[in-house]
Length: 426
Image (cartoon, rainbow, N blue to C red; front, side, top):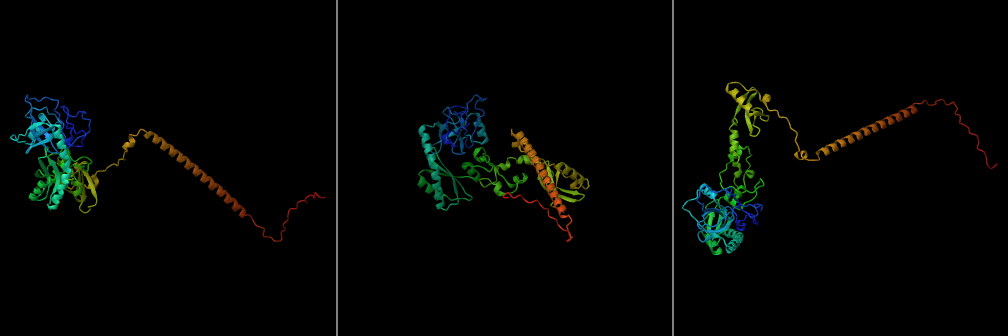
């Protein structure tokens, strides 16, 4: 595997392993960069006795090219090499060797007459010059953008790449219309004192060079493994029952996301078993029209023409039977009688189900319920006793108030006489 030890996706700081198995840390560095390659055939001998002299070399970001090892150098994945370029030479990292190189060359239709050679393994001086040039690229990109803005050119300079020996400087730019940058090249040549090469790229190629994080939380496909940029249209979203929202369907390049094509064939294969979305059912209660389709549940929703807000979900097998009845000249059964009745399932908390203390929680909750029930019974008993006491007191007061009063004024009242107290002084 192409290793990126002590890099964060930078080929200029590759570990440069000398073993055919890749990284010296045995793939434990935990680092991978753009368009990394794993050679599954590294431990398998080629069926042909002839040795493959071609290698794949990777440069900055996603740029790769094929070179011939005419000198028979011991090259392995991760080796930093000096290769032929025009003018001068360039420096890159070997990303693939062996039989897989021939497969990639056939896949990418590499011309046979275009033969570029590998000069040598890069020396320490070559690597130092190369890394020094790479450190200048960010400042040069900012300065180049200022020059393009001063010339009022409708273009965006996306990336800058130095050749390994500094003999050429390549500017990658995006533009909606044709740009006349003759004056811009003169300004660049006088400012940076090297040969200038301008290359226009698309917005998807720009996203692949810059990289980033997608809405799925992973690195962009175009900057990690995707090299074939196919056209994507809104029909892919319609077939997958997605809302046509440009903000959600567009990627960082501003175009429709490439991942809309990943599952499109599966959706089309599944939809081939569905009746047409323009199906109209002639039922006993009137005509019903298809409202929407659910691919995963294999259902279709219908609504009557005069009751558009009432939707009825039917399984596709039932819909096919109703269509067959209509073809025979018979009116279909009302949708209310054949609609799918779903049983509501209680949501299961998977975290709680896998918890080791789930049984303890149940005992604790039951104990709390028992305590609450006892407290409630005691409270009810106390309230009942207080109510009985209050009712008894009210009855006593009522009885006292109901005693007959003495209304006869001639009846005398006698007071009880007590004996006089003895006089201790006598």
